Length: 258
Image (cartoon, rainbow, N blue to C red):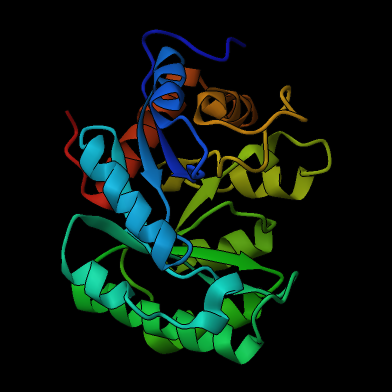
């Protein structure tokens, strides 16, 4: 299956541009592969401000989120609410729990996650969730706080059980390069049970480079490889996946569809 086609259009639902990145070059290389729009995700105040700045420099291509990653929860949410109040931010997050690395105490992760759910409700914005080895805790907080009507589990890593719990709450699932990995059978099973209208696709670049590019730094230009594997798993045309991901992502973030 071809990794790209001139008739396809893609949105990278979740990516990060590092300070040293040549952003213009990344966007040009991605455009050659049909990747036209990018949700650039904040993980702390600094990267959230950087994402907003990039969205102002490339207003037709880059759209910014603002949030505190669970790794950074120990530093609190200072500045995020004010940034959200200024507008031009399309979602809150990424936020949630990460019990794999435990860079912040669990109680701080929960406090900061709850605060950001409150922001999503206050500003009527979508919520971007990061959860790793903390599914029970994530669903518990979402149920207690009332999950925002637009919520996505970014870089979904669960299996069918976790997918069912997320989907029954109305969430979207965003699939990354992990879906191409050899040991990701439970994830692919979760993908196959996900309604196409709830699927989004991301690179999470510069991390999680998809096959056959493992070993290279991940870039948004590799997104079509992820789409290709999803189309293969769902036994459908690549354009069907491209069109669905394009429509779903625009609807989720209320983006202009031009």
